[in-house]
Length: 356
Image (cartoon, rainbow, N blue to C red; front, side, top):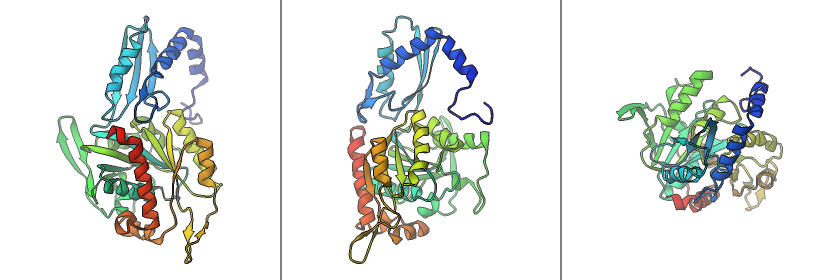
């Protein structure tokens, strides 16, 4: 791939080669149509639209695909084999299962750009889910600003490695009942994470597949902002079943968010909900003051057809909680902002309760 070619863009040679093999194209379309008959019971959509099937290839009379699922969805492999057995030309279907052992639901927390409170949202949402009784893990994959350890009071904690039957695994740390792993724990304090290309890819892949999470109801992955190499690698390598998109009220923020949405759509990962952070400030008289404008979150709702599940107000205690390692959800669970996180956690549990 040339340095000017987009990661998801095929070269002219690839397009010509695929266009010339009409039989392979027809067979692939036939496979896709059959797979669209299989639906996930929780998200109530087919496995193609949910991005669970990736890297689908037809080679001669054989079908190859990767299936990205949670720990409770292994029956989908059998359903795929059954559906595709009706193809008279297919000799065999090879399915590579891509899952994180013990993790039922993996969700990404994303933003179009930095500075919108994505990590703060991820930390407080993890705390809200944990307080609601869920077993929660938080993977800080933001290689450009891994702040989760500080936000949860972990400081310079050391990551341990253990031997397992499947090889060496990182042991997640624990804070406030939440299991935590962060790329920031591998770097020296105040030093940039100057990782590039293959090294970056390897480290991110290790953090996805080589952490001994144990049994989790939710694994939240705090993505880096934007749409670079790191984001693409994480989305393609992990069984993310949905994205929580964090934005701010300004209409100008929408253009940045669109780029992230395009990236997710390339791999078929749906945006399941939108959170509008710094939505308003509550004045002394109780009135809502829109310091950063309004309408950004609602505009995304209209474009993406995804629900706006929370409008988080500006609260100085949120910032202070991040600085001292005590999330607002735990310090003041009755605050207006905390109640919004409780609302969002309740909506997630309502969506995924069938898988728990």
